[in-house]
Amino acid sequence: MGTNVAEVLSRSVCDTLQKVAFVFPEPAGKEALPPFRGPCILARMRFGGCGSGELALAAPAALCHTLAANILGVEREDQRANELGEDAFKEILDNLCAHLLLSLAGPEALFDLGLPVQQNLSLAELDAFLEDPQSCGFSVEDQPVLARLVVEA
Image 1 (cartoon, rainbow, N blue to C red):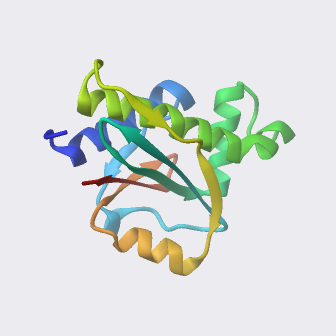
Image 2 (cartoon, helix red, strand yellow):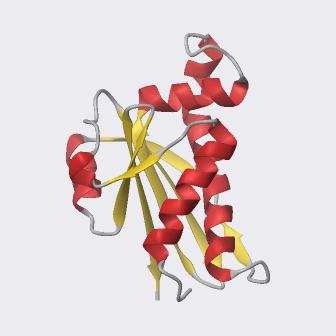
């Protein structure tokens, strides 16, 4: 995985969100992100095989509901979007992980993908994610999204 990981991560996040959730993310410096408001969700998944590590995404819960509505083809106010927001976010992460690993290692590489898990983020956890030099930011529908790839040696 000798490629510029940050560039591939950024491109993969944008491509995946466009194709899966029909939104158009803009890469943004973390200092230029829209503010995080309301409860925030962290989705993360581990991978192993040709390389091992963890991929994580963080976003406001309200954005997760919007992404679910887009995926389902329903209005944002539809109850199904609220019920499935966190599942949609995990599904986006799963697609992102596959896209990212293929982009980094090529189609011949074999990886074992773990199941995506999600948790609510505390303010301290969100601050730590923002401060992490391995995380990068995006503006999606005027809301912030953070992504982080940690590759283990």
